[in-house]
Amino acid sequence: MNKLIANGYSSQLYANYAADLKLANHQVSDLRLQEFVVDIEQCGLMLTQFNWDDWYQNSHLIERPEYIADASLYECRLLLTAMARIDRFSPGILSNMRRKGVLIAIVERLQALHYRKAS
Image (tube, rainbow, N blue to C red; front, side, top):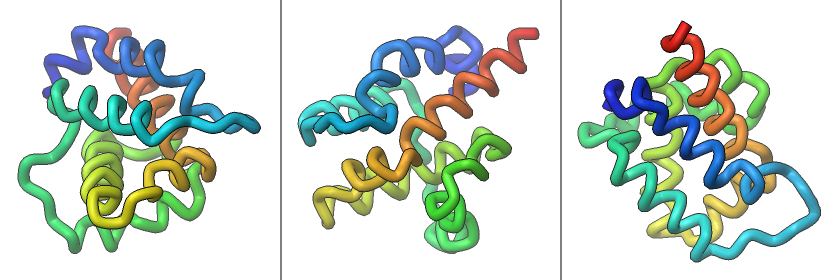
């Protein structure tokens, strides 16, 4: 997974989805958000070993998206994995997280982590 980030996948993810994930007065279809989930799954950003206790300990990040600016790669992956799993059983979670600014905060943090590694 780190190899994909090092090879610029986070930049591609940002380029492909930033406009859709940014806070604005526009609707983003559930289909587009599912495409985002498929992309993060295919690139290996989703955790294969998921610990709900870790989610509960880090869920405060979704209440204050500005905290995500200091999140680790693991925390970003944890948030993405949890939100994607929860959305399967409670459709609309991803859309809500987009409106709250959580998804764009994660993508921007992944971008920052990528550039920090590159320098």
